[in-house]
Image 1 (cartoon, helix red, strand yellow):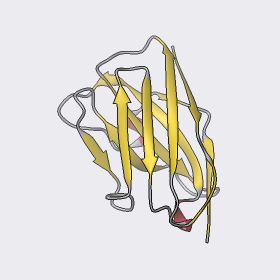
Image 2: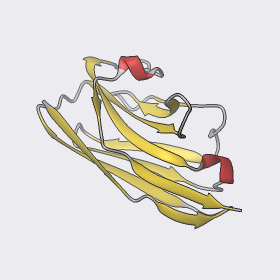
Image 3: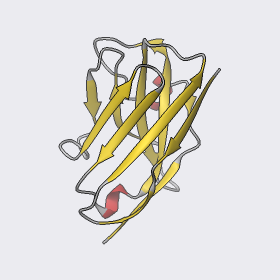
Image 4: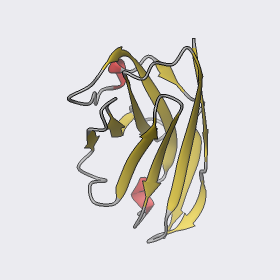
Length: 125
């Protein structure tokens, strides 16, 4: 099993920045993809960003140019969020795939097998 623990959420004003971190433990694999999703109550979990085992990244259109995902092996991933907007307010979840992703990234929540508990990000206007 894999355990994921997020940190770094909080309250920030519009235009500000936050950095989310995710530490992975257990039976992790360097060939897994890692990603971030977010969810607002009453809505489906939404893809934010993902990174393959080779470092290829993918982003939702709504965050391109503002968010940046990184990773260190299979033990750590981070999401740098800049120029935050009120519509970025959500619970953010870290995720890891069970399958191997090298040359492209997954983007659907069903492509990820392991999830963190989530961290709240609130952007005030």
